[in-house]
Length: 369
Image (cartoon, rainbow, N blue to C red; front, side, top):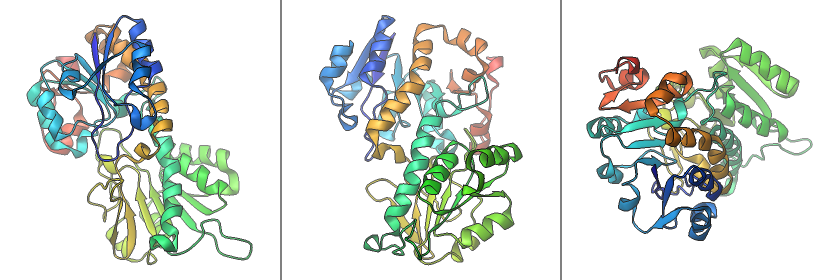
């Protein structure tokens, strides 16, 4: 199979979809890999390393996009829609529930869209979302610390304080992969950490992990409101794979927060769970203020640490990329129910129900195709 790796063009997106070692795995199975020139520079990989791994370097994105399968990091942007063609496979993070325009273009072009974020493992986990969630959870705490600095127009509070001074109150909504990573970093910094989670089993797992290092609360409106109002930093990590996130932090809560306190929405690319965050920001212009509260909603947070992120992502995606390239796609869908959940569009049909519900578009059960 001819496999293309285009350069990411989203603002400040320095990740690349695959490392040279990942290319080597694909070439081992006799696939032809075409990478766009300089696509790996942001992550520290030069063209020569891809050539050594067996890839062919092409100077133009348009030539790379002619490939039968495209592997990316982020969703295609509007300038890339013109490259779509029937039965082309695009394997990337799509987050289509918050992007109707892209959904319609994929349908119109009859692209086979396979989303990293909705593939399930045999244990019910989301293996291709996990690595970036782990990175984003850690970065949320680092960015929160940065925006507390008075030199960045923050409150001037040192998150973990000093002996005899106050520490930051950090509330993390959601105890999944990103929430756990954020809680671990904040707790290790010795902040006052509250984690709010709905699932009773997860609450007990979190207690087994953190013990009394964090305060665990059941997710409900009253607990969220009380914790948010008293927080110096709120990190919302709530995500429903493939669907729009629920609005758990209301504008009423935000109005009652301390001046220059901070909200970071890790799942903004899935619509976000904070009522006062109505758009994604970029690394070029990451924050805005509403009701004197700093809001951070960068949709590609892991792009700030591409060396780590690209390696972690390739570690997770390469086995699936090899399976897709090696096998009959229909047989793979039949044999692996977790992989089947990654399918978003195929043959001009929308086959992921949560996206259809979000955009009020016709849904087709993939088993009927």
